[in-house]
Image (tube, rainbow over all chains, first blue to last red; front, side, top):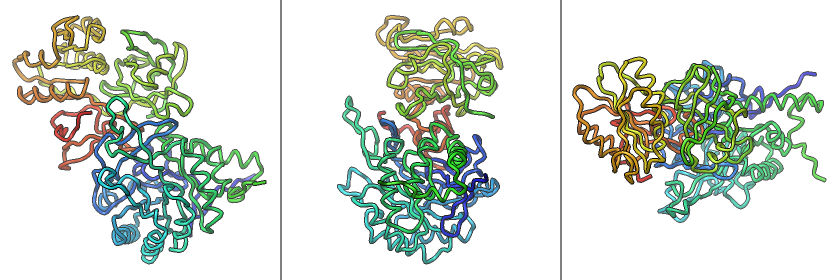
Amino acid sequence: MDVSLQISIGKLILKNPVTVASGTFGYGEEYAEYFDISELGAVTIKSLTLKPRLGNVPPRIVETPAGMLNAIGLQNVGIETYLKYKLPFLREKKCTIIANIYGTSIEEYVQLAEQLEKEGGADAIEMNLSCPNVHDAKSKFKCPLIAQSPEWVEKYTYAVRSITKLPLIVKLSPNVADITEPALSAEKGGADAVSIINTLLGMAIDVNTRKPKLRNVVGGLSGPAIRPVALKMVWDVSRTVKIPVIGMGGICSASDALEFLIAGARMIAVGSYLFRDPLVPMRIIQGLRDYCLTHNIDDINKLVGSVIVE
Amino acid sequence: MKKLHECLITLHNLVAPHHYRMVLQNKDLAIHSSPGQFVMLEVSTGYYPFLRRPMSIERIFSDGVSILYKVCGEGTKILSTLSVGEKINVQGPLGNSFPIPEGYPHYLIVAGGIGVAPFPALVEKILKVRGIPPEIILAGKDYNHLLCEKDFKQMGCKIHLVTEDGSAGQSGLATDVLETINTQGETIVYTCGPLPMIKNVHKICVQKGWLCYASLEAEMACGEGVCLGCVLPAKMEIENEMMARVCKEGPIFDTQVILWDKIGDR
């Protein structure tokens, strides 16, 4: 039996439903030493901003039970350097590229998307409306994310949708009361897919110094610790919107990936676990194929949302 | 080059209270390793601890490498329970290595505590390529924290012992001894240890006009430069200021590129 792992996001056809979470794979160069990165359904690159960013003051990461907190603060090379020095490598490798973008205003998102499309810098765009680490936690009591306001999500999505034909993905935050609301707004704004979820806000303190372990005080929690939360949100969102859901949050194995697909994700992303095992995306692709063969499934799309709730 | 290796543990000894030496057998890993590089060890097969543990390569043999580590948290505690004959997944070698430029009649090493870890391999390399035994300042809290003394002696190094409590060698800090050393001709200093010590070694080297390379450490997730967790503010080549990745641009840095004023009291 031939197994098809092919899926589509908008008009973009991907050879399999496995990508990497933005910020865990750089621009592909490092892990290309470990495996053929063109085997991925897509490479999702580290968030791009208009100008290069230095990111937050270290310490930026701390290990936590079954996961880690990070407060990188969107350190990145900026779009110019990406287009000039990083993109050629990804193109030479024949990767499908999902370019994650971050702006501080609607105009910046629009500018980033326009430039990426014009210069062939992406095959799809993922709007990061949910980075938890770009606000100063000390000076502000509240750090609103665009993804926390359904109204803003729709506005931002619509603005970018209006200027690009590239498939558009909106990455949402779990730090909300009901994630289906911003998901519906993204769909209404014209998104082709939603990425569920970005990291959960968290904190850790060194009891000897009584100082937060992250210089930024708070950070985003990732890793298997958040997997059940992510899975539930993927299930919620996939029953609410008609567009595909890209599921992510603590995926470490093919079995974890299958959970997300069965819950309703069309595609999945591996994140923090790459740090532990750079080969995990390849193991997952193989594992998905093996599962389909064992369970007589000729098309992975038939698994999507197939959860049996009695 | 393959970077993930299943290594057989062929030796695992307590060398001082809370300090262990572990030999990891793997030819491929050994062939590609250089002094100053590090490996990431998978200490658990489960999700706790979640991340690998970065360790300096202590010595490079024909069929493996050794590491020297101090038990200071959950990861190293688990590591210390592994037995000879068990296997462990090792990622590496990672990062850059110590430069050993020509034309330096004096090689000086300043090691504080477990910071001695990358130096046995460096001394062997310097002896091999330059034929000059480096002079070593070996410092620690007390006599229990002076590691590798015998190894360095066998390699023909002149050693200055320093302890904070005076229980061995001179009483004081590594930098007290460094200040008193006067050399003739070009001198190159290699250092590793607590960050305040490295900072002071750097200052002394600037005063004396010596080139100084430090092996730095940081909380690290990936070891490959993708997570951007282990960065330090630095001034390198093209860019005025950048966040240099300890795992990729380092762990060995010319101490003049580090923006020391921007590094807090970690």
